[in-house]
Image (cartoon, rainbow, N blue to C red; front, side):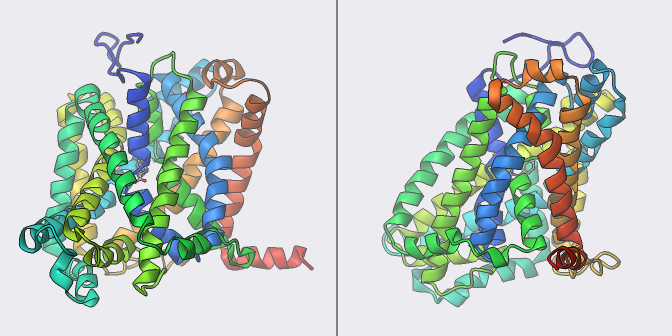
Length: 481
Ligand code: PHE
């Protein structure tokens, strides 16, 4: 790999050791709680089929082109996200003010990090529960010694009632993330990705095959893939696009930051395709694993955030080796979550380290410490609507945790993506773009069309339709006669 220098111009800049290391790290960033926990919850809350098919379209026509744009800016700029944008702008003879798109991204990554680690804490809690259960129940038979489903379902609300425990678990998860990011790219982030992602995929495959043999797949397939056009409302479309960004780690400077560590020899277009394909496959398979269990146990598909944490443990109760499978499942989710949280911490850290001229370990600790406070507040005030914000349409009745989630996935990420596609499509010089994107011929033109016209326009429409559903319906009504 070519050795380039860091922001001081002297020390060699950190970088991935190979193309596959980058793929593992980027897939690690993409595949996480967004796939296993958020995707099934969003699909269930937004009616299943219509959401899922629209989601797939969003990944292909908006997510993938924006992903390529982000990685491209990062690799060309070879710096933290705002600085990379500034360099691309400068080389194209344009204003450095465009860096604001990445400033918002860095802020977004920080906000996601703070509530992401709260959910990471729940995962740790379930690892503890299943480990304890394995000791008491032993290998044979199902988990929880046949205790009634209601009792198992209540594990999560009981955790929600225990603010102090949620805060402690959040801190533990964040501390683990901090440990790896402070070690740097090759011995920290790359290490985590190269060990944990392959293990994740092995466990995922084993549990999926196991799940497929327990039946219920048909009903889940019908639920997830039956397209009912009438259910595709403005809010459902915004939820789908937001989920696509969240899952692909877009609009929050994460992929730009990772792109800066990619070698010159890597083809960015095909690599982006692999990242988006792997991420979408995991989300769909996770849905196909979770919904059969939900239906078989007679649970509500719209149960929301509780879906993964409440329905699966009930299923593990009735499975042979249930405690062990449950333990392995949550360990697997933990691995996926950790490879994502390191990327969330890396984006603001890379920026802060360069901006303040601090050593990596110090910068990481300060950023993580701030996320600790915000996440702890979100955990502590779980269920308490945020005064002054919870009255606004998009944030109706939401507590701090959900406000952070909505603000990032439904506002910051789409806005960040609009600016990124406009920047790459219209501002950056064509010569620079052509030399980086790894595309040629018709595909190249198609991608240019997407980033110039399709992505910004569609995103603007979806954003407005999701935030002001009544107004949009009124406009449609006028046009529809
Ligand atoms: N994509 C990650 C997931 O699905 C979350 C994430 C969002 C990571 C944004 C980085 C940036 O869990």
